[in-house]
Length: 186
Image (tube, rainbow, N blue to C red; front, side, top):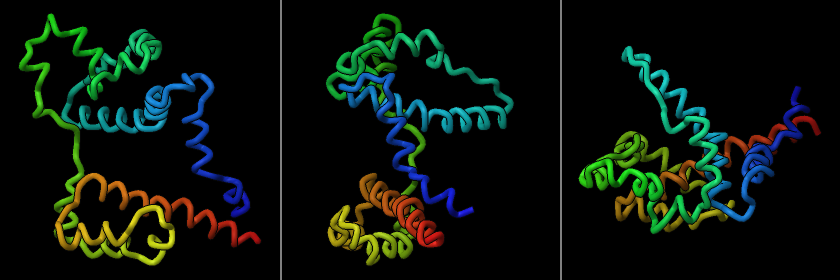
């Protein structure tokens, strides 16, 4: 049973998706878009479907129209992503039809994780234990002393800290456990 796990590499699985042959190999943006389309989008659509159905709504996702997606895949990355604007092409296409105050909204956001609240309260010790652990320091992926200092002294718990925390948890769950499973069959 464990032998099946020794050949499995989560990294290789995701690398194959990222390095897919049907994606413009010179465009990092296109590779990331394809990767998100294959990995993140199915989960987002499942959540969207469940949330809308839970409230008795039949929702639509018009930007996933097949022809529109196929067209968008042919547009060069420098046209889609211009001047730091991820929605440049969309905004340019709609500027004559949608009021400027709607197009320039800054109050719209996704679903942020309340990481600040977690770290300030009940999860503080857990986060500190994970990021300050001997195992995390041995990896040398990040300078843990700086991260731990920012959390303790400055109270900074932004997206970067969240990303480092998730990276360490990922390493433990996929990298470390793979080595553990391999040791069981040796």
